[in-house]
View: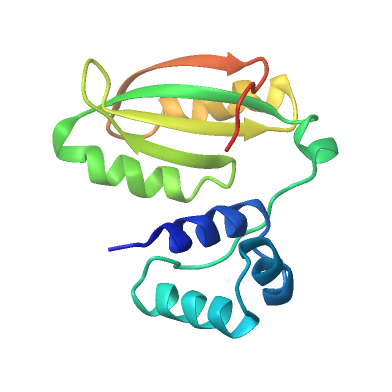
Length: 142
């Protein structure tokens, strides 16, 4: 069970995973030792599996992003997932309920590259159909 302090620490780490323990401790109102022991405990429990890079808005604004809804042949869904994992422009893959089986979040450096990427996804063995929507802007990103 996570405490409120754990949730607060995780929230701060989501904002900046490279923040120093001193900075985190100051923001949380606890000692550096407390922060370090909480982080170690969360890592050992598997709550923190790793740290990632957040790209600058300048880099991000030049990418074209889209949601791609995918219907897969049921027996080939794991094969579709494996193929999607190999595509570097795939950022997120969600398994969903309803008319489609997956939502794939993709990004590309241009509309032309996005078009090629969408064709590549649609041509994967096991993909029955796709429907995509280009993301015009992101209003909330937590």
